[in-house]
Image 1 (cartoon, rainbow, N blue to C red):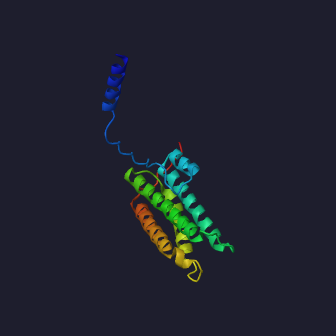
Image 2 (cartoon, rainbow, N blue to C red):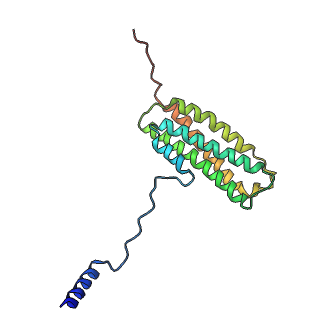
Length: 178
């Protein structure tokens, strides 16, 4: 009788298992692949679009500094082209995400005047640097397409910032108590 009960339990257990495995759930969309865990935490902890814009700009700045460093190295890494392209892609990802925060703040009619000024100023500096990159560099061919994407992404972001500055309500006026 024990063997019959055991067999019945096994059949019952098998009937509960699906014949086809469940589909794997997609990876969580929270963390951007070009941000470190610390950077992603800072973005997540930022309390406003303005703070997130400033963080994304600082991360973009960091990527361009690393790009400059890689270009100036006399002994090239074995994967130099991959590193240069990765840094440019990470830069443009940060700029795009900052522009997304501008749009979000606009939808919510939030005051981001200071962040817009900073974005406009730094964005123009970034664009100038990208446009001046030496086409005679021996590595230029390896990152030319990514560079063009970075230039276009920066131009698009600056256009979004310009539009947001024109459409944004005036900054609140602080009055002194009487």
